[in-house]
Length: 308
Image (cartoon, rainbow, N blue to C red; front, top):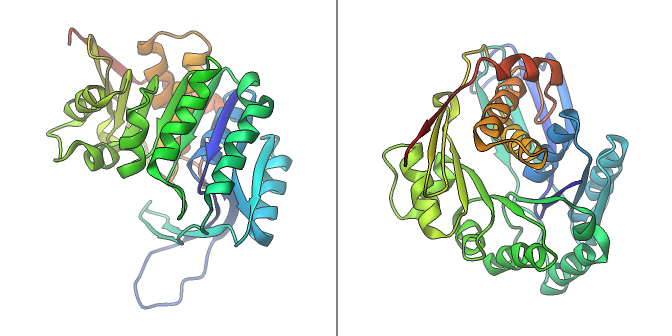
């Protein structure tokens, strides 16, 4: 089982319109509401790729109850800590050309006791039942960066490997606990390395120097790069007509962890992941990829292994 931890989940509302135009009334062609946040998107994509998943994090208010009920309806096995306040909403508007505008509400504050409750919940069997733990996304107000390191350490304490997909101070803190995989975007990598890297591979090398065992950095349509400090990889992704690229990084994360959990080599896992991210961009809504299309795209991904 892959356990996906989302400290700062959201109700994701996506509207697809003919054309994004400022200062006008936009009437959607399609509207979609999903339980979101990085970890929940990862869980949805991993489920569609055939993995057994469970989800956890913080949820509050009517929106939080809706989020948990919706995750349950999708078969994503939610076990969330109830907190005061209301789970945030994110708004995405995407047009038929694939252009998008995003509005993210801030998360509701959590307390130190809430964080302790989450760590205690993990210890009641969630971690013991997991083969991998994915800790994904931003921290809500009140959650300290050090708490991300504590989540990695709690996983390691029971022998469970961790993937971290986050940015900024929380990623910097998580790196001190040496997660097995750090999978981030180029911008997220740059947020902790001190200066923009010249390319995705340079960013990945910087993350390994900061504590990652394997670092994978995605760079949109330019593909991805990875390194474990001994070998490095560059990944070219297929060219497609994108419908909605939001969540493609999360689908990449799902593919990476699913393939790794199944015993795939790094080369195989990167190809599987890149195909998942690409397939996600062809469908409206994060993590709603078509597994048959993903399988078709695997053969179109090019992974080059380098000596360093």
